[in-house]
Image 1: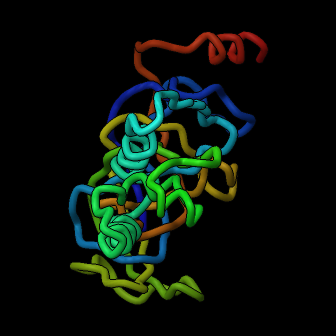
Image 2: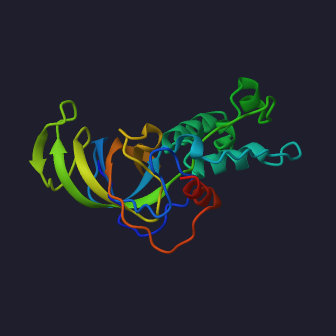
Length: 226
């Protein structure tokens, strides 16, 4: 599916890269993806490669103070685990008479941990939270997902398995490039209600002239070296 951010603003969220992510780039994109959804407010997750900020969080507390339950609930709320998995844990926990332990089981994997209700081993979890709200502006073309051949102009809706060229408008500026120019900034996924409904690549970026706005120090330094 496709994205065309028409939201004004400087691209100052990430340092510049060799293919032109410079201050002032406006981000209408035109993208292609396989998947399906109607025109509506969605969330777009872009693959930012090495640009993402890594945060390590350690949870410490007394035995039975709720560390695993709190952390598991937080992971679920942040989209690190889907609803279907939580429902599975809830059912299994209820069968053992421990229905309230469903979130703790996100981290507690050992049989002994689940039977005793106490964390024994160290638990590690990694997940991503890069989400930017977007809206579908226009369904431009429905295409064959294998050949890329145009099948229909301005389709009214898309269903699961369809591929299309779509314009999307992000809620705020983001740093992207076309997949052919810079693949790490050219992939994206569309998520709705914690479910991935489409994935794709950015086919083109419509850049506008920069306006007076905040420019990062790294971007200023890059401009001076030219």
